[in-house]
Length: 94
Image (cartoon, rainbow, N blue to C red):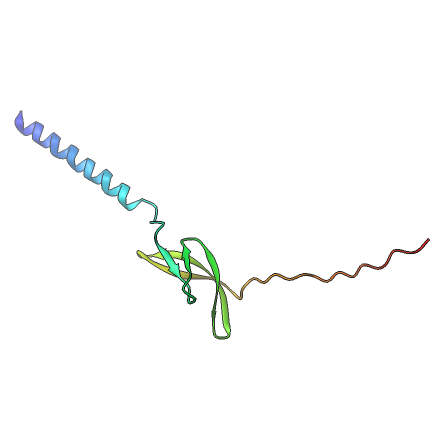
């Protein structure tokens, strides 16, 4: 009888350890993890920025790779904003 109780206790203990280990491995990344930009700025995981290296520029996102933060290149070039010049003809004079 004592042997059955001991085996049952061992099985329940192993199951509890397995559940705890699964919870730790599936947890979200720590929000204190950040990527550093060349200018010294900090970016949280998921944030994007334009990285310029000499004549090369590209859009990158801060990501976690094997427990290390890194910049993932999203596309060449950086988005720019511009104002389109629209010429509106004058209204006719009646």
